[in-house]
Image 1 (cartoon, one colour):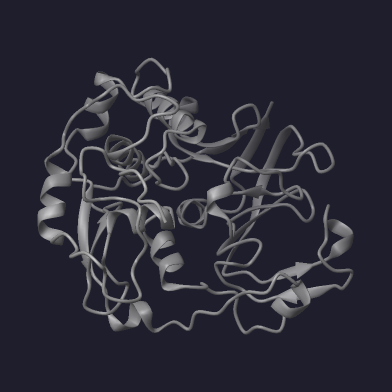
Image 2 (image 1 turned 45 degrees about the vertical axis):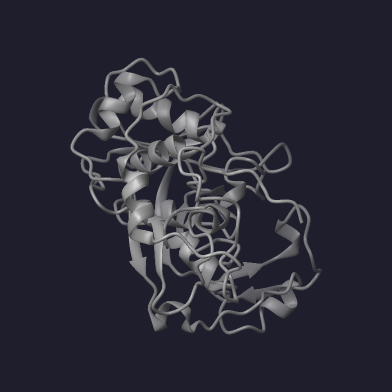
Length: 330
């Protein structure tokens, strides 16, 4: 197989390779040396849609810490990242261009610690159980939990990152107890959300905004929602309930492309169709919830509900209360 091109051009040793199950053919780079080199790069290039690399990862981590989510941190400047940048710029009184310019870099990085860190894998991290999830909902219903299918998937959700990025950052390292990994640090310097008064869903750019007094933008997250067959209605709704680790009543009569004709109850877990949290809305059968497919955020249509990444819906779950208004606009 041909050797793939380096992913992080500024860091030649972080290239396209997976966590190895067996000893690597070439020695892995020392994590401490890699971390020092990654965090020493404080360049501030202009970033826009189509950009890739280490600087994009830095921008995405800083956005995530500030509650302006790019969805998965993957080192690719997509429309999701551009919308997150524009929302952050608006919140800081900057021109909402959706591009990371010098002023935006300064606002993002102000008072922030380095964006990469290391973590030593524990026995508990890799103990599982990890179970392959069948495509058939009837078979899914027979499982005790729709949990993670691999330790890599679990790590990716924990660090708000794509599995591919974690693999690229850890060439030649095994995902096993005692191994030290280089990872995006999404917790150090992370902001707290205060003063929430309203949620607003903007259908034009597939973003959910957390607003404070005077419609001040406090946070923003990419979302998926229904299309023409299951349109998200315009106007005002409210949060009616909060459920953590919900199960899911699979009713083919309510789904656009059901995988079975049977009605079954799917167990909770991060790979449940509604993810790890459910925020019920005043419209029957509708809610704001997580997803088993974070890479598809704002890129697919749902069966009507509003879908976020599991980590973003858990952030909302921690700050909303029943009765909070949810405004939907075109």
